[in-house]
Length: 77
Image (cartoon, rainbow, N blue to C red):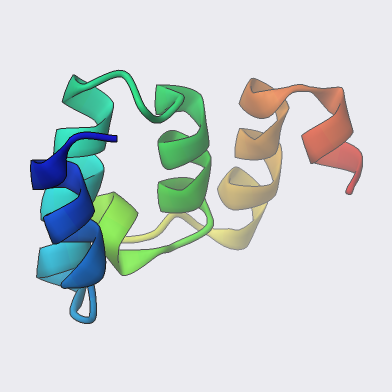
């Protein structure tokens, strides 16, 4: 992890700061984009900001069905 990422990681108390860290880590290849997408799907504010998700959270049915995208192991958990 480079110094810039380390510094952002230390300051990630607020969702916007954490979103900056997530964006930088994604650009650096430190995070799997699918994991950040899953966190956003789960409603994590920082992950949603990092991916510029401003749309409202989906209905319960759409939310549950949306887990299929992340593989059966995730869907059944």
